[in-house]
Each structure stands twice: as C-alpha cells, then as structure tokens.
Length: 253
Image (cartoon, rainbow, N blue to C red; front, side, top):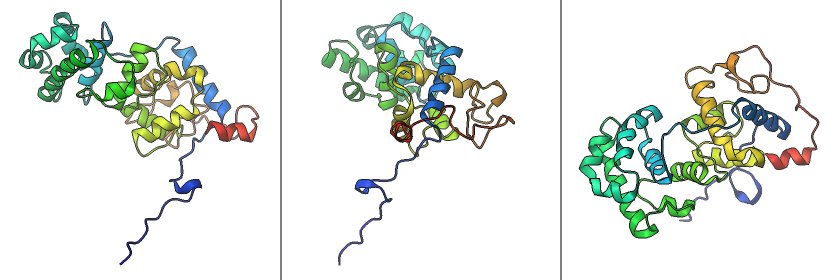
C-alpha cells in the first residue's frame, strides 16, 4: 500500500512557511540605533584572557550562570590559560576547579578532550571557522557563534535562552527553534549593527526584558515594541516609523 504523503505548509517550493517579523525595516533600524546609543561597546560577561579561555568559558556556561562560571574559572585560568597547560592539569584537577558549576564532571571531560583536539588538529589555536569549531568536543552552534563574534569579530548571532525569548516575545524574529530565531534575526537586523547585536539582545533580555516579567518602564524600545506582554501604556506605532517601499520591507523580513 502506498504510504500517505506528509502535508507541508503552503509556501513556494513546498517548504514550511517562514515566520515573519512584526516590524518594518525602519523600526528595526531604530531599535538597534537605540541599543547602540545605550551601550556603544557592549561586552560579554564571561571572563577570559584569550580565545582559548573564552572557548572553555562558553563550554562551561551551558546550564550555568556567567557569574557562576567566572567564579570557578578565575583560579582555573590563572593555572591554565593554554590547551597544553589545561591538558597537563588533567581531568580530575580541572573537575576540582569547576565543581561548583552544573554538570561539572562531564564538562571537565569535555574540556580535556577539547584541549587534546586543539593541540592535535589545530596546532593549539582556536579555529575561526564555525564548521571546525562545532567538530570540537562540547562545542555546539551557539558556543561557536559566541567565539566567532567575541574572539574574531565576526557578525554572528548566538541564540541563548535570552535571545530566543526576545525574538519570540517581541515578535522580532519568531521561531520554534534557536536556529529559526537565529535565521530570522540575521535576516532583519541591519548589517551595520550585526557585530554587537547579540550582546545587545542578551543584555536586554537579562536586565530589561526579563523572563518572568519584562521591565517595560526601563525599556528604550517600549514605544516601538509590539509584544503582547508589554507592561506599559505606551502603544506600539500603528504604522512604520517612516514610510517604506513595500519591496524593501519584504526583503528585510
């Protein structure tokens, strides 16, 4: 018997329909202009001294707070700030340093395997390519994007829990998965803001658009925001901030 064909969302080419941003290009431009004025030089909060220690810190930050990781890695990085030094410590000693971090046993194992791979396959250098980074033990797409952005200045979008929440909550880049949100953000954020965009969104989610309740009274984009969860009386604009060519708006979304 012939198997029934799976139904697919109606769209060109049979692909699932892409979720659209609720904002016109001029509105997104204004959002990120304000973020840039608010934090001209945003920085990640994970402490590190070089690309290697950044990579280790991001690997350790999975299911842990940046503050908790920093507390553990200050002593660890003072003892080992290169793959060779970290490998020389060994798994048990690395585990002792990071015991206060969640999943510390598995993370210590990954860090040692990561060091060995860097030494054997990359001459101890952290690669500046996503495909190479994601082949390393314990390194996923989000970790690779953070390293590429912070260590190498590449305009990547590392979608953590904050950015995933922001993308969906304010309808900037709705998506069911981090990859969908990442794709949506890269599509709508103006290129000249991409270098710092993921830091702006992380900090906005951490300190303003918080998980339990957004602090909309402290939000620099409250008058633009179209989130149904807004806690202020400031209405979102009914029309784009400036008249736009429909083709340009569609291309940005």
